[in-house]
Image (cartoon, rainbow, N blue to C red; front, side, top):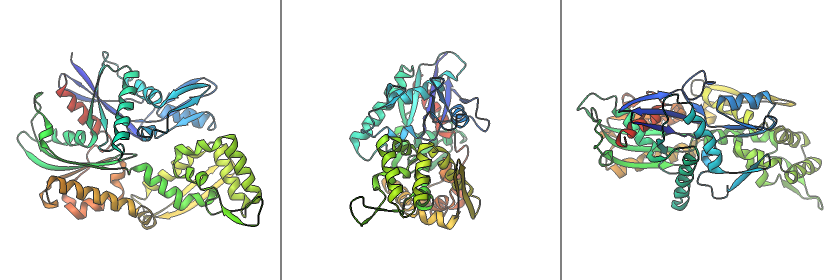
Length: 422
C-alpha cells in the first residue's frame, strides 16, 4: 500500500485526507465534532488532570472547568512571529512547534488504517510579508510535523490545493481558467490556475499551469478582532480615562494593555501579576470603575475565548441577517451589543478593499481580465460574508461563483497533490 496524508492545518479548523494508491478520501478527525469532518485547531491543558486536549474535546473540557487551565487558539498565527520563543505550562517549557505537534499528532492518530509517515502540508501564500519570517514559519511547521511523527514532509500552497480539488470535478479533457479564493482564519490567498479535467498522472506537474499567486494577512480572526475593537472593547475600558497618580491630568487606559483586547489569544497575557495590579490601580483612579472592573473580570476569569465565540457567532449571523446582537453573560459580566450588517461592512471596509486589491494583483500577474476567468472557486467561512462575496460577484458575475465543500476542499486537494509523491 502506498499512502500519504493531505493535512490542512488551519488557524481556526484543520482537515485531513489520505491518498491510497491514487484514491483520495476525507478522514473524520474529531470524534467530538458532530457537524463535520474538521477539527478545531485548539489546545486545552487541564491543570488538574495534567493533560492536553485538542479540538472540540478541548473546548468541552475548558467550559466544564469554568475556564481554568490554559486554552490556546489561533496557534498557526504565531508561526512567523519570532517574539514567540516559548511558553511555560505547569512549569514545563514548550516551544511553538511543540504545541503545534500536539495537534498534528492528534490528527495523525485519528486515522485507523496502517501507519502513514508521509504528508503534504498546506501553507498560505504569505505567512508574513517579511521573507525571513515567512521562511521561519515554514521551518517551524515542518519541525512540528517531524515531532508529530512524520518522516516525509512536503508543502503545497493552500489555494493551489483548492484549485486541484475543483479540477478533480471537471470532465476529462475539459479546461477552465480558475481563480481560487481561500479564506482562512489568519490569511486570504488567491491563485489563478489552468484546470484540466482527467489529468491524474504522477509525472504531471501543475506548476506550469499556475498563472499567479497572491495573498494578504487578513482572515476570519481579523474580522472578529475588528468587531471586538469597534463594538465591544468599550465595555472593557477602551474609552475610560484614568487620573494620574501624581497629577490632576487624565490619561487613556494603557494602550499596550488595551491592544491585547484586539486578539483573543493575547488576552491571557494580561493575567500577569503586574498587569492585574495595573488594572486594579486604574480602577481606583478611573472615571468609570465598572468598565475597568469588567476588564478585570474578563482577564481574571479567562473569559476571552467565550467572548470571542459570541462575537464570531454574531459575525456569522450577519451573513444571513441584516441585524443581530452580541450576547455575552459570564459571572457578573452582562453585555448585549446590537450590530447591523451595514455597520459590520463599514468596520471591515479597509480589509475588504485590501482583499479587492489583492484579487486585482492576482489578475495583473496572470495578465488576465476578469472576463477571461471561467470559474471563481471560493473556500473558507469568510467567503460567505456578503460584502466579500460581492467583490467577486461584481467583478466576475454571480454565475461564475462556486462554493462547493468550502471547509474541506483544501485538504482534499492536498491529498490529490500527494499523488505526485507516492
